[in-house]
Length: 180
Image 1 (cartoon, helix red, strand yellow):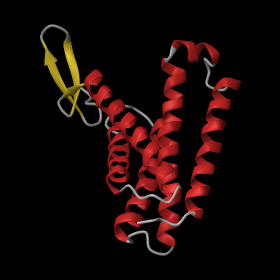
Image 2: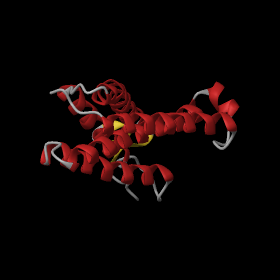
Image 3: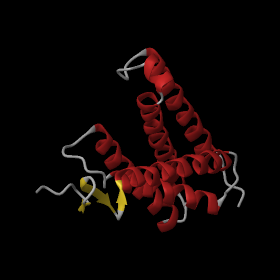
């Protein structure tokens, strides 16, 4: 029997074998993963524009970073047999978040660490929202009809608007000084 990564195979007399991740069924674990993602996106959409406006929200920023990191790390626990684009985004997101955390907590946003943090925190929010758009076009029937293959104009427009928004937010944030 082959065990999926991070999964526990648990016999279920009614339905055969059931895959568990951290003691949760796949649907339960997926709900946890998605919930963390939504919290990360929501807090990022509050904390990063405030940061770009010169206001520091330490608790909101910490919640953004923690939930975004938890989203990324839980993504690696799904039973996936080979390397996928989702895993690639996860690897990039993990590295970007690690740099953001070092810039914030290791260097206290002093000197160049402030700009490095600004760029990497913005990239973290962008990557989480990038995946949200991908998943929305895959799972929401109305959106899926507009772009069933993920390369049609509605999907590309949504991703382009997100990218431009992230670049503008990051640019504005690098130009501001914090009023601490």
